[in-house]
Length: 216
Image (cartoon, rainbow, N blue to C red; front, side, top):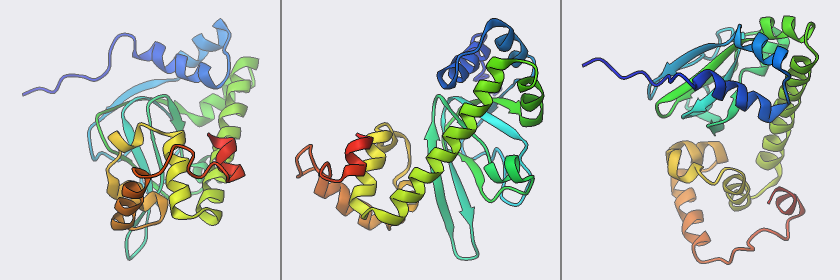
């Protein structure tokens, strides 16, 4: 049986709308951006890009969910989780022109607007609004990396769980717990204990932590 396409007539406009959540685009910038975007659909367990291969695109997630993971000889380490209305890529490839250090793994049926990074750079030199979009995307990439590093290095496991689920409350319904545990740097059994403990704690858990208070 032929699979039904996930791409709808309005999908391109959804990609532009997501970009405008990052930075406003004037009409000329929107039209130019449409000209370089390719719409693609992915099924569960597809890979968008893979570790040790070059990734030269930005990916605008219209619908669906994904994880980034780094594979060592021993295991896979989930380094990021995300879904609808997010833009993602491999910073190492984009900024350093080197192979990606992670694989992008699709977790459910997903629709993506693919933006070639070099073409975006070319447009950013011609359109001020696209230049603003490019700068904002890269700034958010770096900020999210810093936040993730801080949470991993300086928070206890329960605080990491609280912080992440405050930022991405849908994750518990859409992300397999095995990947969530890997992202938090704990075992699945430890995650189950933490979740059980949270059911018996009040809503103010962790808010004495200034970092969590700012994030909530």
